[in-house]
Image (cartoon, rainbow, N blue to C red; front, side, top):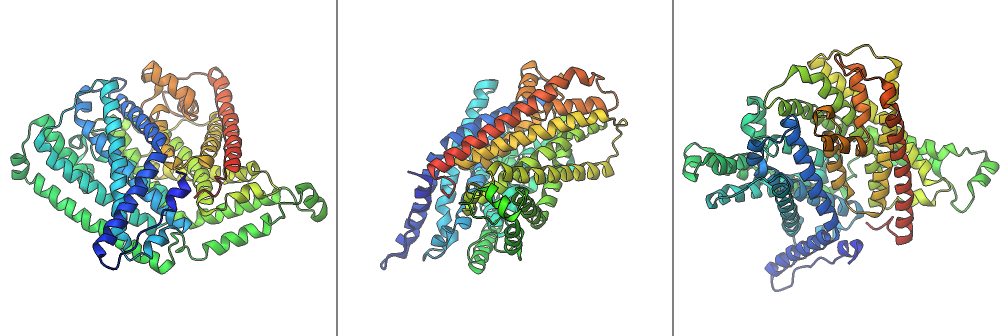
Length: 575
């Protein structure tokens, strides 16, 4: 069944004789729809599991400074499984509901006799199935590859069940927040990634500093993961957990999360009723400004060749490109709240990176090298995310066809978005650097013009990577899940956590070949950090030129192929 057929399934209404049948029928229909969507994205689920397992292994190597810390792996296996469950259930619920809200099909649920907050229980159950499949795949592959033993005692099933309930209620909260606040959809998976850094998925909570541990216990799944770890590793019993207050605290936390999640989703449902169901309707004047920004520069008859337009009106071929730039800038201004949220999240990521490497403490000797790495990753994340989400929004709102109906080649219009994304990424990276530098002053050597070479290499390579992701998004659904995992993998294979000269040979080779920021980051460290390797730039210059150009060519090729597949298959309006 095609994706648009899945999303067009009719929603049941109550029969005259039984309201209970109406409720059950609505929940069952949403559950069936969610399972059909799962079948359509099985490939994404498998790729996600492989990527998560790779990221987990890379993080453990970074924590162990190049060696796998067996004692930590045994304590974090249940944590990584629970985080994958939370990641997939949240991504499925948030992505699917926002997609339906943008395309108008969520109105069918809102107009039914059964309240939306009841109907989506079926979708939540389907999301649980997806998350459970992904968690089991990650757990099995990690145990197989790393040879890590895992066992779960029968009494531990009680905190496990409470942890799953906590993840589901938090998923409802995230879905309500995304429907109520449009920019949250873009930072949702980043925020869930931050939860994974804190809840014991990669490092036991007991090793975190006291203030971070207090923050971690407020987040979903943390208390449950810690209690399961204590039962499996430390030999604690349910009686012990009840006596020291851990189990009652978990019960209270789950109840509070349940009430908060229900309240947030109910508020989102009321908001949709007021705004007519469009999650972007709260943007005051945003749509009108975007329309004015584009109409001055992009209006043209697609049947008239561009050369004729230029000859008859004197309109430059750069006019549509300028219109795209203007639209992108207006949109970025309306998303400034998301910019600040992501900046705060990256600041916390920076702290956690250093806590991880220092096994629970900040190592002053590593602050400079990790800050440089996080600054490059921040640019990488913001540039790729800007291009991807702008195209994803066009596809979901049905305006992506305009890219291919315009007399201007779609590559030119995407280039305009790339230019805005590069500026946005540079501003974001600079803001992160300045905030961290204000807290922990970082000393660098005096930069020379040689710095421009790795900087240019990073910009060009990331631009090519963004083009590749945009090309995949044209004909594949829910690429956002893979994009966020690629960012995580890029952080660790790119040498942000662990400089690749300290990593195993296979990891260093993989990072240098695949990740577009790896070699540029290493060259920046050699040029800017005191005590760098001092390796002459000329020795790495060929790779600094070849790899970004290869990514640029690959990205352009994938974007062209993706556009051809989308046009021939009618996928530009598949949502």
